Image (cartoon, rainbow, N blue to C red; front, side, top):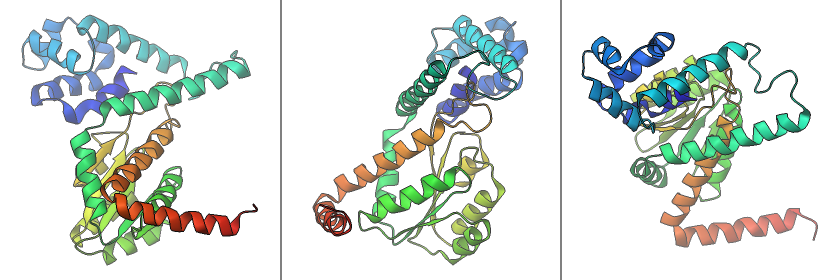
Length: 280
């Protein structure tokens, strides 16, 4: 879990803290057996900087970080099949583990979110001419849901989940448009290429990903980082989808609060449509 926390918190660290964090991520097995003084020397800094880095990551000190790092490494060795449960777990245990992981992901994501960043993104989307949302694979579901949610607020929002169509639409964008890319890894080539095309066309770019050091995070004007439970879901961080969807809902409600009077009008129209398509 600490490895995921370092990835997700990386952008909020100071320059020195980032240097220490990068070393931990690169040499985790070696760091487990190091003293704070030794790690500081390897990172060309002082031991107190190591302690500050640990506290920035929410740990009491270097000893606690090393314990969690050792647990992470041990968990990865045992979890070679990339499943969030053990072979002898009962179905009830599996169910409880999945829900616990989802709850932990939401709590961790909430703690990580930068409110000022979320508010800035809210204002960007609110004032956009059009919002193009890109997502492939499991992210396609989030992209489609986001387009639907924003459309309910009267925003011209469109979801694109086809590889070739993304880059084409990105090139058609213009100043005043917004490109929102949803990608767990943040390293899917077509997504990065689309963001570059959108930016070149003059659009504002926003990334929703699990990794602050990803290509997507580096390319976008604004980025929202959600917590990725790599320990329990080493391949695709299934629980990250829950956090991504919650972020979309949060953005929708924040936009609605900014456009309160319009929101009331749109919800009334939406409810009228629902009444027409549902049995009473």
